[in-house]
Amino acid sequence: MSKIPVLEIFGPTIQGEGMVVGRKTMFVRTAGCDYSCAWCDSAFTWDGSAKDEIVKMESDEIFTKLKEIGGNQFDHVTVSGGNPPALLKHLDGLIHLLHEHNMEVALETQGSRWQEWFLDVDDLTLSPKPPSSKMKTNWTILDEIIDLLIINNRLAHTSLKIVVFDEKDLQYAEKVHQRYPAVPFFLQVGNDDLQENQPSHLAGHLLEKYEWLIDKVMSNSQLNHVRVLPQVHALVWGGNKRGGFDYVNPPLIS
Ligand SMILES: C[S@@+](CC[C@H](N)C(=O)[O-])C[C@H]1O[C@@H](n2cnc3c(N)ncnc32)[C@H](O)[C@@H]1O
Ligand SMILES: Nc1nc2[nH]cc(C(=O)O)c2c(=O)[nH]1
Ligand code: SF4
Ligand SMILES: [Mg+2]
Image (cartoon, rainbow, N blue to C red; front, side, top):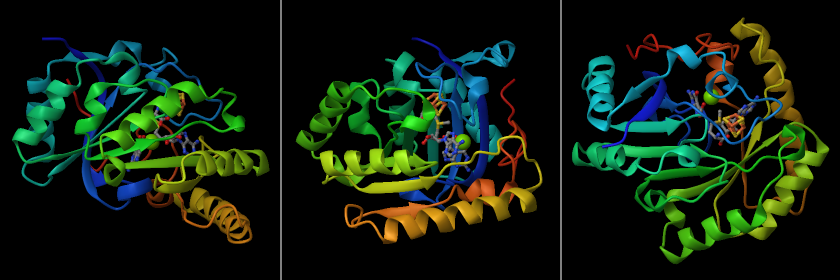
């Protein structure tokens, strides 16, 4: 057995982003990331600020905690981070346990690392990072991941989601969409105000950015078979300060 470093277990709440936006789900947030995006809204998973809160858990302990917090009010679990696949070869144990209990499993990752268990994920979001993040995409690895998903017939369970802050990010999004035209494609509004805690203040600002992104995509002939979304949870619950949104239940793990 190998333990999983967990920082948060919370929900039920809505999946606020991407391919299953609005889906009722629980979240398991693992610690550690191989990136350090300039605008990461979950930087506490990798910047050391929450290192004392990491709890190493077996899959069955995670399942027990999910049930303790979510009761019978969920049938979908989203694993996010941090970057779960970067460090967790053994997440398949948790995925299989959840499937045994008739739960669907979603995963959020930037696509910097392949794991065999990607083939078992019901809703797999690959979110390669645009220039504003200051990260560099490893195209060889991303090509390999997407090839493997296609070969294994997983396209209906896969999506690409690009966060857009500016024109350069939009050009990057075009490049990704052109490179992988068969993969369902989402553009997501970048949240540049990670300190704002007042839902109403942040929502107004994010809606303006959403309108900007919609206008840009509508007039772009390279971005036709796409979906444009805000982070719905940021609109509803406001700021991205840790604990500032989403926590229908407290992020209990210990
Ligand atoms: C916190 S990340 C964790 C999973 C994985 N490391 C990744 O980046 O895909 C989850 C999602 O939040 C997005 N995200 C992070 N910070 C954001 C921000 N400031 N505005 C909009 N989306 C953001 C990421 O691009 C990713 O799609
Ligand atoms: N409601 C909600 N939806 C989300 N979708 C992706 C999230 C993430 O941080 O990975 C996230 C999150 O933190 N909360
Ligand atoms: S890859 Fe994801 S978790 Fe890692 S720094 Fe970037 S947004 Fe944050
Ligand atoms: Mg988030």
